[in-house]
Image 1 (cartoon, rainbow, N blue to C red):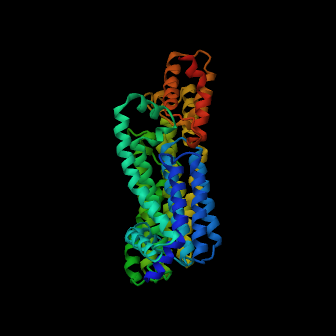
Image 2 (cartoon, one colour; image 1 turned 90 degrees about the horizontal axis):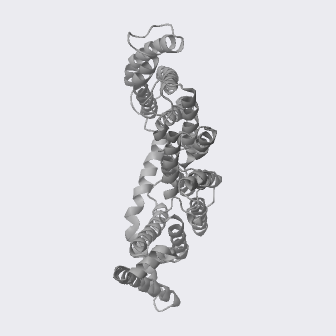
Image 3 (tube, one colour; image 1 turned 135 degrees about the vertical axis):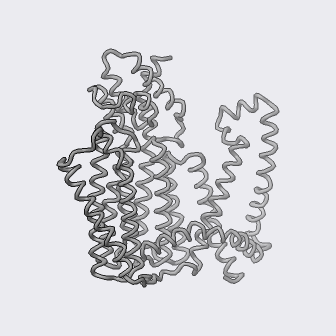
Length: 487
C-alpha cells in the first residue's frame, strides 16, 4: 500500500475505531459477565458493519447468523453466575467473531476444517504484525494533513497522551498524601479515577484501539486466500492397513459392552460394584472416542478416496457411538451412586457434543465438500447455549438436595455434602432457598451452610447498573431473608 493509500485508509477508519475503542473500554473494563456484554456485541457488529461499508464489501447473510450467535452467547453469560460458563461463553463470542470476520472478508464457502483452523490461528496472531502499520498509517495521514484542521485533532490526541500519565503520577501522590481525599475517591464514582484503575482503563483502551484497527488492516491484505487445495495424496492402502486391525478390536470391545454393560449378561469381576466399574473405564473410553474422531478426520483429509477405506471409517464411527453410549451409561451409574457435580454434567454434555459432531464427520466421508467447520461451530454453539441457560449449578443443587433428603446415594462424604453446595454459583440460589424454606425444623447445620452461601455471594454483589447480572440479582433478592436473620 503506497503512502497516499495508507493515509486514506487511516483517515477512513480513524474516527470509527476511536469511538469503538472508547465504547469497548467503558463497557468491558473489569466487567465481562454483565448487561454490558450484549451491548458490546451490538457495538462490535456495528463497527464491523461500518468497516465493510467503507471498504465497499457486501454484508453476507452469514454476518447476521454469526452475529445472532454472539448476541445469544452474551445473553447467556449475563444470565449465569457460573464462572466456567462465563469464561467459555466469552471464548465462544471471540470464536464466532473471528468466524464472522473471515466469512465477511474471505470466500469461505468451500473451506475444509483444516483451512478454517489455520485461518483462525492466522487471524488471531496476524494482526500483531500490523502494529507497525498503525503508526505508519497515522504518520502518513498526519504528514498529508499537516497545517489543516485535521492536524489539530492529532495534536489534541498527543496532548492527551502526555497529560494522562502526568495525572496518574500526580493523582497517586495526592491519593497517598491525604486520607480524606483518598476516602472520597474510595466511596464515590471517582473510584474509577484511582491511579490503578486509570492504568487499567488506558491499557484496555490501547488494546481495543490497536486490536480493532490492526485486525481490519490485516484482513484487507491479500495474505489469506480463499483457495482450498486438495491434500488427499497419500496411498489408501496404508490407511486400510492401519484401520483394519483397529476396527476388529473395536468390534470385539463393542460386543462385550453390549452384552456386559447394556444387557447385563456377563458377570463383573469379583469385588467390583457397578459404580466402581463405571468410574474405572469412563475417562479412558472418552479419550478413545476423541481419538477416533481425530483418526477419521485425519484419514479423510490426507488419504485418497477408497471404498474399503470409507467402510472402515464408517465402522469405526459406529463403534465410537457404542463407546459413547457405554461412557454415558457408566457416568449415569456413577451419578446414581455419588450424585452430581459440575464436571459430571460437563462430561455428559461433551458426550452429546461428540455424538452430534460425529454425524458431520460421517457426512464428510460420503459428501464433499461438506461445511464441517461451520457445522461444528453451530452444534457447539447451540449445545453450549442450552447448557448455559439450563444452569448446571441449579440442577446440581436441586438433584443433590432432593436425593440427600431421601437418604439415597452411596457416598456419605461425597458431593451431596451441603458444604459442596455452598461453593456453587448464584445459579443454585433458587434450588437452595427452596430447600431451606421446606425445612420445617430449621436445623442448625442447614442454616449454617446456607448462611455461608448467602454471605459469600452477597460480598461480591454490586448494585451498579453497569454490573447487572441476572443470576447475581436473583440470588441477592432470594437470600435477603437469611442475611437479615443473621445480622
